[in-house]
Length: 564
Image (cartoon, rainbow, N blue to C red):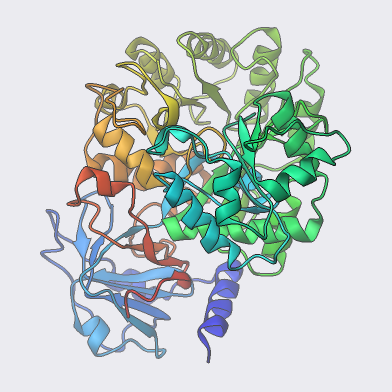
């Protein structure tokens, strides 16, 4: 049987579910104290069946004891063995499993990104090409050349969001001439953040100047931020077909698993108006998930997607939100794709006011989780005050309401949010363009406080999706130009990895909390084998960590061939 056939069978197993044999529970995970699995109930030949066995690795389970194993086995999508007994790999399980020698590499649970916009990434026009790990104009050119090898001549290669010229040695965007040199046969469009500025090459310039709403393009390929970038992005969006969107979905999924991010809690988009005022964060909230659902229907989905619903009502009738609460189900779906919560906006005015309060009140009464975002020194205060007012009427203590990003939150308000059962999710979005000495978020204060906290990327508009870049920011406090902008708030690598795995269980809720985030018997078999040792590499190499092997529910969904 081919690897592709094996992968397909494993994916079908994920979608079907399937109980783990009772013997797995009887044998259980290895037990013991300390970082290693010093004491364990040994594997018994023939006691377990397995589809996949990973062995000879340093497998960081991220369980409550932070134990490390060398062998892990998966059957029907779930973990059936974690331990150090090499006989579990060398003498074999029942079922003729595929075995993979990790050759001493570091492995971790599949990462959970508890706040991102992977659905927007999948709906990008053109062949979206992340530039998160380009550090010079030459790197940009090489990345685009590599991409062009797999893209038919004449089709657009794009990068919309997730990068900034601050990360390039030259501290500028490439020019038309530099892009022409890299891509003589493909139009290209590179755009920063929500609304640019942007740049294109000669073929792209010709397209944009001939668009229904012509775009002003400089002789050097530059496109001004704001309206001109809006016109360019709109012109590209209007060419999108459903099949192209599905292709973009597959590209986004492939990129995510190449980084080791296997579970994504998507936060929706601003409702598109189909005018130049739309930016990179705009899409049709009522159709943007359909290409993803189609990919899952075809059993080609390779990430776990959790869908939040963003609402921006402007009056206290909160009409669209109310219809959502009446006609949708929270935590509805399967292991691969499931509905989530209301957020990251619950009303057009995200920082408080009567519409925000009414939206929060109705969501609490319906028993839904809420997520809102904080970017300033004052919005978290009015948000948490509104949460407290709602809590006085309808308890939200068990609903896990979240304030996201929180670059400037104070410990007083952390304590107030914690008192009503809330949590915060954190991101290194300041890495690209943040400045100053205390850009936030206050990682150290929040972890020491003990409020439920998790890690996210907020990719792919103003921040990278790459979790290892966020790791770099969190443990060094440095931005893309190497300046310390979050002094005194650095955390350890172990703490950061915990935020991306075990601690992010809390933000998923429902069934997911007992299925994801750590490598333990009975949980879903999501494992990432890294190209370098995350725990020991120099800080600057943290940004270049990636996956050489990604497993989702026992299915190998990314494989560079570096292990076997």
